[in-house]
Image (cartoon, rainbow, N blue to C red; front, top):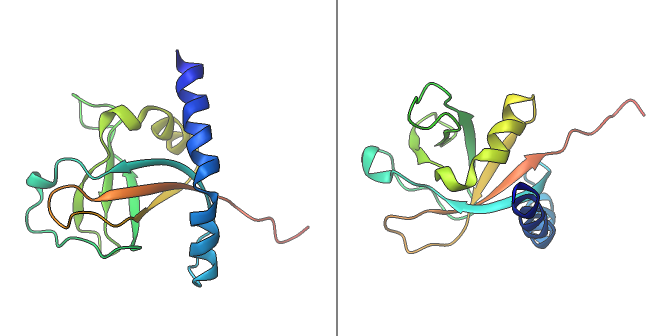
Length: 131
């Protein structure tokens, strides 16, 4: 079952490559590999945080201290204000990657402007500039 989930996620990653190319063409400083589409959950816990703009880059930060969800990943704006969390159903593989030194970020997609904030999650690609 885990392999099926991984393969399904990999298919989604391939489909999102054009989004990464568009972000790079727009002059964004990050280059990444599209990993999954998700949304910001638990927005009601952070009512003070302003909704992000479409195409805004958001930080993803591991929160293993949440005992009821040890694979928690917080979604934050660049100023550090927390918007919510990635939903638990989409954090297992990403949490393992973050725990092993990989970096990830999210880019907001167009949404309804209310509760859910749709995201495209990217795994950062490190370029070796010495080669």
